[in-house]
Image (cartoon, rainbow, N blue to C red; front, side, top):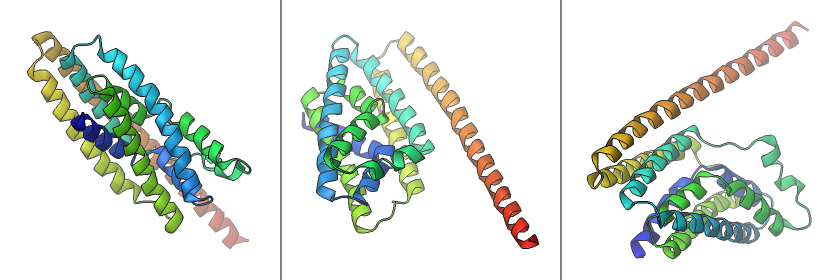
Length: 242
């Protein structure tokens, strides 16, 4: 149980670093009292992870443990690529804090609950709960996410600055890749030939598909930045000409 708690805490803490909900926590902390934001995040996280643990626990009752371990490794591999890709707040999400007037606590709970549905931290919690003590995973994952968001709240409240996102993203991704290799190898040790073959093909497929998507996304971002720079240059030239 202690091992499950520590692993859940570590995995979810890493998953939350640089995540969209952490950026939202920082945004709220710039405007409202830190303890209100932290309380809202704690309530929302407890609810979301209770659902995640329930789903993962019942899935784990009927799936072989070696297969679960390999699937967990594949999930961690995807999370690593997802972390490299990174999250950003669009205009609607970043303005949520501006639209809150009367009930800050309710707004924080609702926005974080909805933000976490289907997020990688929720999927990671489901994965962990399939083959570990559900209570330890629930407590560890909840505390891990609250701790990571508390870090963002502290930065937002005290400094008003964002953490160095690229450094955090690459560091977190490296840890996810480590967990992916660890879990996959551990599962393959006890797996039969068929599972080993399928797992190998799956790893190659994940790396190919997600890697291609990541490269394409980076190219699109670079193209968009280049077009924006050209527009700024044209506008500057036009002003000089006038």
